[in-house]
Image 1 (cartoon, helix red, strand yellow):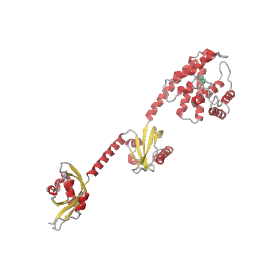
Image 2: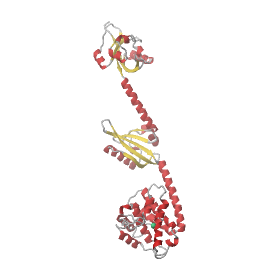
Image 3: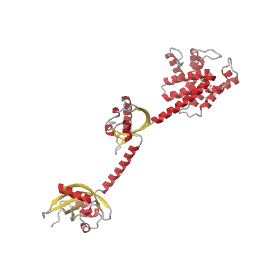
Image 4: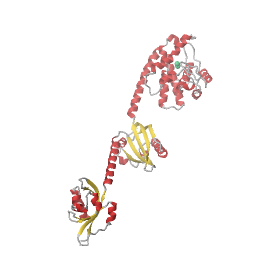
Length: 449
Ligand SMILES: [Fe+2]
Ligand SMILES: [Fe+2]
């Protein structure tokens, strides 16, 4: 019998590809093998390997059976992945491509190639492990995570996202935010995605409110980052959105509690000194209107309003006969009244607010040129909130009736503010006050109806 091969043995050896020819019976007795196969399986020479049968090399008997079954059916087997025994007792991942051949001796044989795919398998397993870890993380993290392509179409979402949407993920993939959120909201998300796609810059910790398909509003915090391919080209975005609703509600409850506590404090003050109580309240209205005119957000408006509601709280410790004294105050009395600023500050300074109320209150009698009290602060040392409070305080004081004098009237108060414009009072704020008065037909715009 002549050993023949349809493949070039030298080439296969150089490429590390194993070649074999064996009998077609279920044992597969080796007839020809190349040295690459000998090396692949850890044998020292062909004779040593030839002493084994092809079938015996399968680590799993059922794989051998499967191989012979396919060969019997199809006359050939394509890239059959299995594990072969290594001489050292370990195993090698290999792939067999073989076919039935008829040799010159008219007998049937199996002829084929064996490739070592261990490195490939190892890589595949490593990737699968990494994929499992990432998938496990994605599916267990209590935040919504989503991947989008360059057209902002959703390509992957985690369990939390799908659950939040109340949809199976296959109903989400390929869609855009416009399919799930109200138009205005989706447009903002679309613009954010495009910003990340086109600038390559992330958007970190953006706080927004979203309306979910089930009709509930959520307070969320979102981070979006660009996704790159291996060449560094941006291929899409990844977003992570955390639901902060419970936290935001807690914060809201805390603020409500604080506001209620201050309302109670105000009531105490009202019983003793109704004038100061109503003055605080009117200054709060004025300050809030000014803040609105300046385009401030809800939080900032609340902070100036609360500061104003509390600004003269410190008068609670000043004897009423001095507070309401008709006629001129002597120096000592005047100094005592001035103490109220420090007192107000002291009362609230240790309360943990999300914004700096105490400092604003502390500044409400300061003037830009340094002529105010208690610290004689100047220009930039006085915050915009402090400047608003100062102007609002004058506006209400001068237009209010006091036991010792009539109201001086709105025009007189405006004249005073106008006179101090730019050197005592902030020009912009005086302008805003004039605008608000003019818009209200030259009448006070801050009185409750
Ligand atoms: Fe005051
Ligand atoms: Fe005041």
